[in-house]
Amino acid sequence: MSSYINNDLRQLIAMRAAYLCAYCLIHESDTSHGCQVDHIISLKHDGVTAPENLAYACVFCNRHKGTDVGSVVWPTQQFVRFYNPRKDRWTEHFKLDGALIRPLTDIGKATAQIFGFNHSDRVLERQVLMAIGKYPGIMAKERMKQ
Image 1 (cartoon, one colour):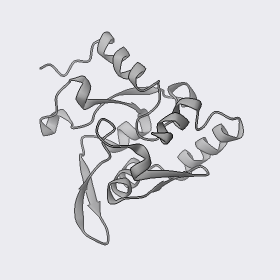
Image 2: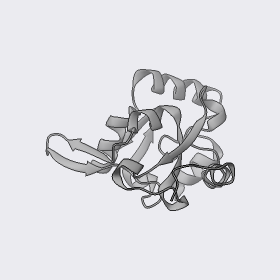
Image 3: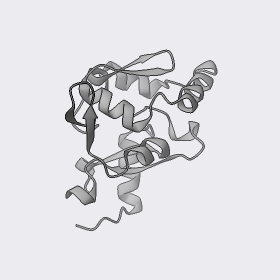
């Protein structure tokens, strides 16, 4: 299968995600660089370009993730896969604590660390959006209930 993501597939992924980053839950219109389609398992690791392996991701989450599929979690020194928005429930691995995204599991820890969820710039972005009632948005709140 080709790695090319045509407009129809891009629209399907964006609509399925309600235009939210599947990882940090920011809406594409609330981040200066928007969102893009992410291969959950990268092509480099034999991932496919198919809806079940694609997620909508803000530029920051997608850039930090790169082609990685997981990371080592300290102090256990164990390799742990990243959160998979097609298979995992966000609320099982993360909790929103003000503008911070707190990991609840080793999967959450690996994901939050590598994706830079709580980098000062990203926290500030969420604080500003929270102050004007745009984060978490209605659709993000629904996802957090699931």
